[in-house]
Image 1 (tube, helix red, strand yellow):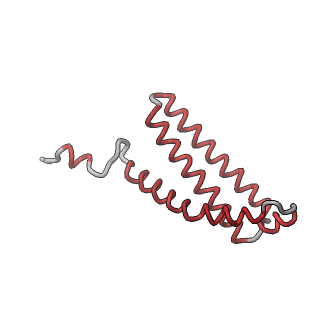
Image 2: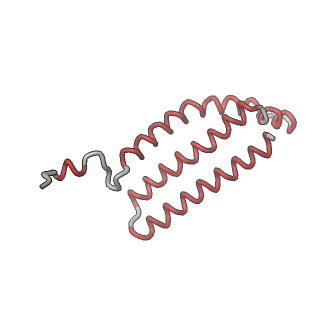
Image 3: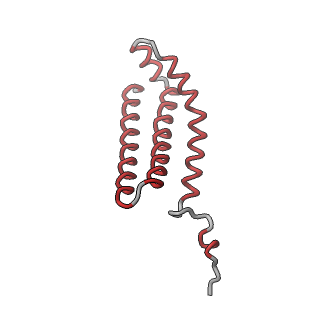
Length: 123
């Protein structure tokens, strides 16, 4: 016979059982983005005002290409996580599911488009 209290069964689980993992992913991606976004803005800001050849040369540098790829991927994944949390708080039923699917598809579509454009520039 098991003597588990309601608290013991629910410990470590959010409403969907993954609340803690989602919370920590959002915290860690937020901290990571807070560190790399200023570096990206300074590096990208230096290319503003240059002609096409200068911009392509700067963006094709491996460090800049990697930094840009990281900003695109983690920035849009962070966006999708935040949008999903907002949708879960304010939408219900079938509308919630449809909106979460739409945000996820939009996020991955923008990631694919951004990384494709970056590959075209960097290679």
